[in-house]
Length: 245
Image 1 (cartoon, helix red, strand yellow):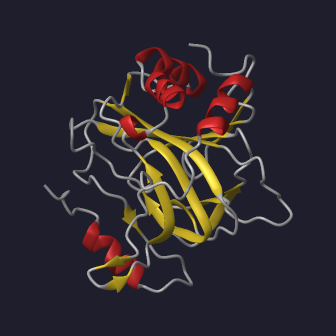
Image 2 (spheres, one colour; image 1 turned 135 degrees about the vertical axis):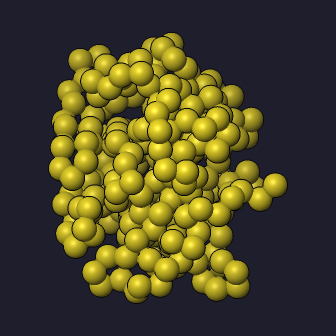
């Protein structure tokens, strides 16, 4: 399946952890499929996240919507997502990032369509480290922004990258339309989206590796210098919670 443009140019950031940025990633046909089939936000297939945690307002993330089940995603878009999770496409990402022994996440654990609504946020965090379905390490997180309406002068929604000590924002990556961002997952790959003022869309997936990792299947949320320490407290409490059966 041909879904990406030829002669891609990769920008590589190494500090504080490896990040790859590739603009104009999908070809026009692929972009048009996602645009044509993108589900209306009023559809019940969108999961709206958790506004409250144990009766208290969720201070970790708000206003985020997702569709993760392949069967809920429109037909042609689901075919693209299925191919993205193939070994062939994973090898393409391996070549782009000069990574070895990557394994596609056939469980679709952290994959699908994502929207952050105006007024939404996601506190800074490090992604889950291990896939509870297959026990493999979460190695790379990949997301392609689909934001034709993005206006750099008026819109927020930047992907913030923080250092290991959580005392400095090192990069603020714009959610430009058709931009692929890939980053390496470590225990301290701190990132988040603290402020969004438009309808911010993305396609998300993860790539795995058969290596040792901390037994944490949830994100670990952490506080910025001016954030409430309640984020640290709640983040620690929820980092190792098991999925409901």
